[in-house]
Image (cartoon, rainbow, N blue to C red; front, top):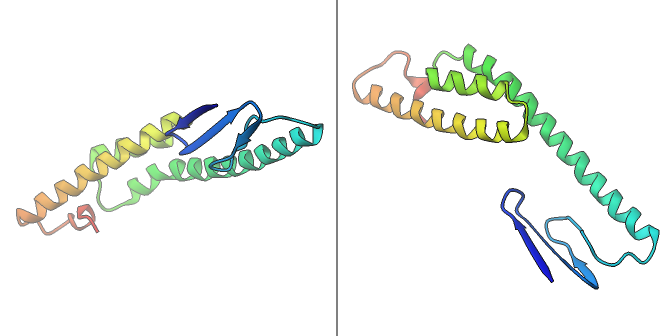
Length: 132
């Protein structure tokens, strides 16, 4: 029996001769005794693909509008602005994933800057940089 674990999807798929195991909603392998078994597998995977496509479309829409949202904000930093632009220009899932990590890091730096400015007595233009 073979076990593959993917940390990207948090799914474990176990398959081997004589059967299959389903975890995380994905069925792979196992014995196909009739064409109906393969059709059922195909329909199940089609449903997952449709859900995945909707999620990717929502993520793409969010990333596309992010640069405009940041530009319209009363606060920002160069790092936050550039990370938002990078996300809006991402063309692959990996680029989006990497861009989200970078954006989160830049938001953290901006929050630290806001705290430092507030601690130094700054009053104007720093409220948006403070963590909520």
